[in-house]
Length: 68
Image 1 (tube, rainbow, N blue to C red):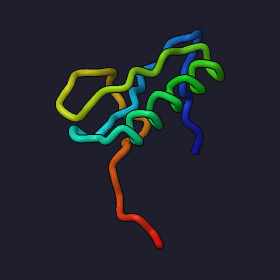
Image 2 (image 1 turned 45 degrees about the vertical axis):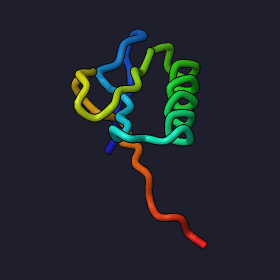
Image 3 (image 1 turned 90 degrees about the vertical axis):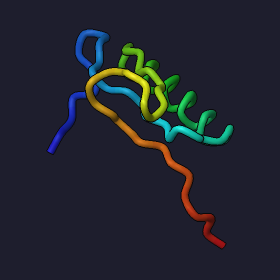
């Protein structure tokens, strides 16, 4: 299966953050968006749960359990 992330500098994907994302997740989302822009020439908006954004969530960033 393949996914077309962008075409002609446009994307229908967003990076979705949980509503109460901490600063680490916020940083990760911004970094991901920055590198996706460099790779595809398309801006991937970072949105929070409950906000309107592009049609498809590319990646959902949520806090998880720490692993020792």
